[in-house]
Length: 411
Image (cartoon, rainbow, N blue to C red; front, side):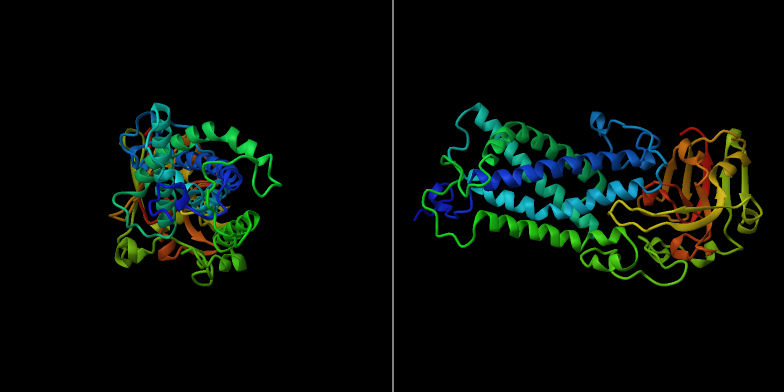
């Protein structure tokens, strides 16, 4: 028996073949296209051209083209798009691994390049495999809150996505016609003709190709069932046993819903949020500025909004009832009768998104609040007491907690 993986006879699994690979490839073609589109949508939700504080991808050049001002309707938009992005990405992991296993003989084929065209195809395959593993690995680590990769997740995942999708697009253009031809023989265990993935000396089969696809599909469904629940509340959240924000709600009462960072983690002490120390500084046109303590905020017109919170890691909550001062009313206090952009700064001193920018259309929405209460009670420290921003359809990190300063004007 050959000992070198470069020999076709080294790979003896009877499952490998053009039909098996083509089925997996078509599934990935659809799934990864959805992942790329929802990833671009998530990028747009951060309003990257609004202010550098929202954009974690320096020197992006043409790759960072801006899509559109992120809308505030419907309020569950980011909850849907990012939930699909993360949950689908996790569910596709068994399909990706099975596809890589099915084509692994090609990675060891000799000679490495038979022609310039073949060399380019091998290079695109290397970028495709490396980029795919990188994107799925960093995505899973981010979802699991394991930041063991060097640097920030945002630029790593952003640049990796472009490398991977460029290679994926080139590969799809080259291979989709062949995959569709192979799928015409979907009822055959082995399509006509011998492909380069078919072993010349196959071992005895222990499972059919359809059985193997069933195992892959079952793995995807299992990951889906143990992950998707964190985008919901109640009993469904408890099914998300593989997600950090799955399981039972983190407490009871009005504040008993999911959070990402606690006050202790952010270094927020009760002293600096107490009545004696905390003041909200609101600055606007021509340097006009007001300082408001919490009782003074309570004297302003208060409004209520039912809004969810959705995070880039894919978890979300259902609508919570928030009550506070409209952002556009705060803008009017400092001379902006027409809504403008705002830079919101937190008491939090370290970490990404301790400052966040919101666009004028977000400030103008009557549901956008500087919230003082949630579900009929004062905000808890972990939910941003004494005041936090809540904006419809905005990513969770832009709903700044422990707000200390708001600067209205064109950013």
